[in-house]
Length: 280
Picture (cartoon, rainbow, N blue to C red):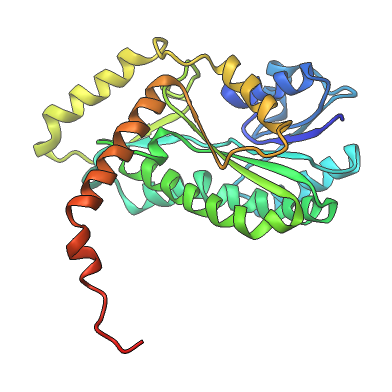
């Protein structure tokens, strides 16, 4: 059955590749981005399978208008891909509250805006699938990534809770957790850095920022294959809650889970000992 996809951040990177994969699969796509002309550069002009819509996900009114346009053109939404986002990097002390608010405005509250707008449509249809694009940074905290990781950890908690709330309506949520993929994520278009400088971090800041620049273009993950994987997952009768993408992310998740289990076992007696000696 032909599906209708609504994809945020579809003017470039993974979002554009997901849109192309969906179109190649015979589905219809509502591709959104801040500028419609940028979408056209990546995906071409609107046609029977493609509708491009300008959308800044931080604007709730725009989110509702974009969903309305999608329903008017294609009749509904079967797959929502919350992909729009960017990475703000820097040691926590070198960031500001304004940096944090901007990071969460796009990576978390932008997802809220679009999901609030789309859910009534999807719920009334009693079927659908939401992909929330997280990251390995939503599984594992990292130096220089305190704000970015915080936004992705928050996205994961939201997604787990939302999945339970909407499951009775035939809706699924999948958290996509990619490791390093060869997208434009490590370019200036997708990364921002804190501007405050604390001297105690000088050595590590320079080394870590340099490592990001060196890794750009050498990531092992193939974003075309990731986009194709999402097409496959969208057609699964029982899709996963989490989809960890790439060998680096899978290995990192294995290591974290093993560490968490070891820590839980080590402190188990003290942990359960905090129960009260109350009468049943």
